Amino acid sequence: MSLPMTFSPEVEAARAGRRPIVALESTIITHGMPYPQNVETARRVEAEVRRTGAVPATIAVLAGRVHVGLTDAEVETLGQARDVMKLSRADLAYCLATGRTGSTTVAATMIAARRAGIEVFATGGIGGVHRGAEHSFDVSADLRELAETPVSVVSAGAKAILDLPKTLEMLETLGVPVIAVGQDEFPAFWSRCSGLRAPLRSDTPAEIATAHLMRARLGLPGGQLVANPIPAADEIPRDVITPCIETALAEAEAQRLHAKAVTPFLLRRIFELTAGRSLAANIALVLNNARLAARLAAEIVRQRG
Ligand code: PSU
Ligand code: MN
Image (cartoon, rainbow, N blue to C red; front, side):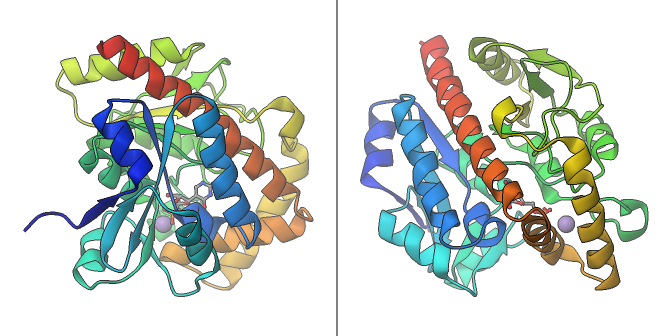
């Protein structure tokens, strides 16, 4: 029995021609942004990848099959659907086995990308160690996935709703390279700076590609976290976003939210508290990550020769 996986014609052709491909996730569509901006953004991100010379492969599970590359109609349906599972490492196989539909988080998208032979993936911000994790034990499965699955993930860092110092410590423990792009500081998703120094820095996609290939030569499992700061024109200054994050976190705590519900709730509340500014920034940073990911994918293809 083989893995139920369907490639879009565009992705199939890119695979055959060994052209650069960038994986894109779908939880950001179903749980990360409101309709219709989620669908518009998904399409704009795909267009940005194409414009930069790579082929986009948005990944989701539709009726028990992993789809690598979605049609416009499939993105639209997913963007409006209500009962979609939010899939991580723990529930991907179950969703396929039961014929259900689910969107893939960073962790599940990495697993599917690897099976599809795709090495570069662009998202907004990864999950990480939540604030208060010493009590809640809420640590995103995205971190462990980065330690195990050899895909380079281009993000704007970890979402700033998280405990960023603890997230960086955990990534170090797990042996995940965290590479800030073009600056020394680890970016904070909606803001360029976090006040935390990133462990590694790189200023060119070529260097990040070389490091990606070098890890394979060393026989190391796991991927790289490429932390690409949001463009300056689009960022929300930290002193503006911080009170909104604190309010949303206090509400989540009062409502005793846990597990998969936490991150979607916080993103939605911060959207409301910033009067939509957080969404505009989120869209800008995802587009920026898509561009870098396309360049990185092209470099990997070029350097592999
Ligand atoms: N990036 C965004 N918005 C999102 C996400 C990433 O800009 O909604 C999603 C990713 O799918 C990531 C998930 O894996 O949030 C993290 O969820 P959790 O904290 O429950 O692990
Ligand atoms: Mn969690």
